[in-house]
Image (tube, rainbow, N blue to C red; front, side, top):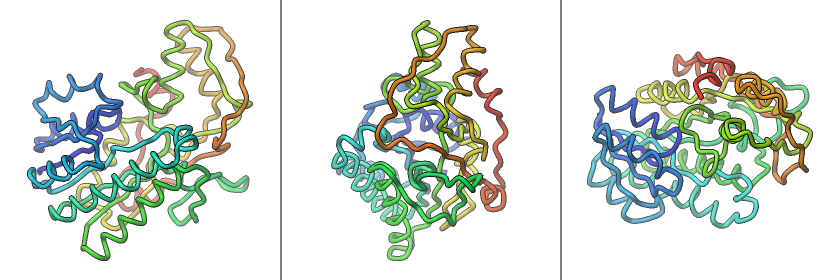
Length: 302
């Protein structure tokens, strides 16, 4: 199968690209390398071509047209919630206009489009009486990032109805694992990991009781592979359904690092959600996918 991976030099994208190549698929990566420069060698080592282009550009659209893919995995995004709050126009340019360009290019190529909305930011705050968002939850994004990712979902459905585009949307929880950049990409696991290795103090914003649903990158890659031929027209949550507080995460990681240092607490940041967890029962039913890696197991791979 011929596949394009936008953001294929990114954290998740590089794992997906490597796996697709190992499965014998022909891959083209489109990435502006704003966050993936350190992983270019991994992609090039397996012989995958990288087109350095912004997803908003004509160059990216032309690359898809020339490659004639059967599937486009769309992972490229502006993914920093804090940056979206400070610069919502830039967030919208990348996540809405960029996604629109990739949708149009995929539709023109007759390719399946696998989109990547954010399961946490898109749904908003998990109610106190709920154990996890399901896909029927009315979205209530609380940041420009969440709004822009939700807009991408609506545009997928628009292209599906207007152009007959076959799409699947994988709403990801908080993905973690090897290769996540603690400097250029969001991810408290990567940030804590780097600081604990360097014996620097770890900062927790707010009281640390805020929870997230941490899903291992290897499991996420399996979900993308499952979406190659299943789930058309569906939005499917990809997570674990398990809430872990930031304090509990730090405790586990500090223990693995052999550190007895206490974290530093600072004021809560704007736009931060207090509870996030995804109900993943639909993923099992539609994609035949379930998470295999516990947080304790996944942290040992870092």
